[in-house]
Image (tube, rainbow, N blue to C red; front, top):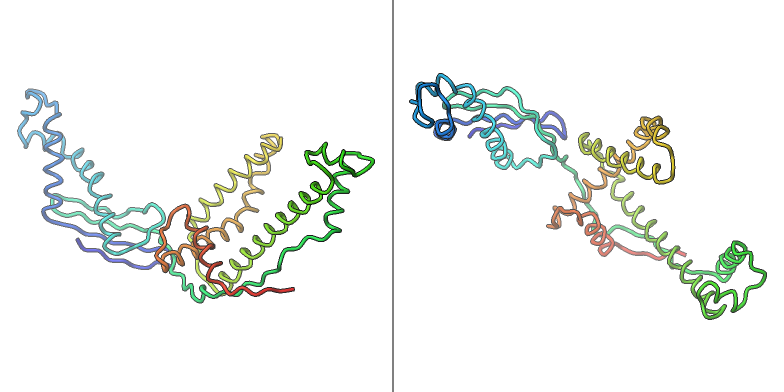
Length: 292
């Protein structure tokens, strides 16, 4: 098999493939054998028609079947031989097949090369999470107001499922702490991602962006429907929603590709857990510095 790769741009390649000899001949023989068993040719019992008669009646359909079976196999061998990280189905053109030769071209979209570096000791500024007495009071006052309670006492606390006012205050403090802690964790992760992307310029594959945008659009439409927005209103706004989603879809794909590049460098599997695993790795390797 002969293969040749020509770069069209940073995410597209044209793969030229040519194969000849026994592989082609054997595939034709294999398909003709299958046809011979089932062929219904006037004047002959099934499986008894001679080869020249089969050639006359079935040459075109055998040719088509050989193509159908051979092109995907040869294509997969070619991308494996060239070590191409293909991310989308190929566009196959210029297919030529005779009894001993097969050649075709395949335009494929591939993962761009991303020069990720200095990701092990990234600086993280973190703030110790604290909850003030004033924050607790504001939250409790808000609950009191929404419940239209006159006084804050043990009886009021029990109505909310706490044995006394002191336990209710502790629970409110815990809830505020967890909320602030989650916000701080999200801020840290967002900052880490922004620093990671800061100096990286590469073309993001269109097919991945379109796929991500379609998934996001589908989810947005479901969310709007769940909120009671009428279907005709959602369809009316669909184009506008899709346009708004596109930049976010592009950024999400960019983040995914950068994390995948780090995963490859670190020998991590590229699976559904990859983004979370890489983030855990980056956070554990980072240079943490407390700010006040």
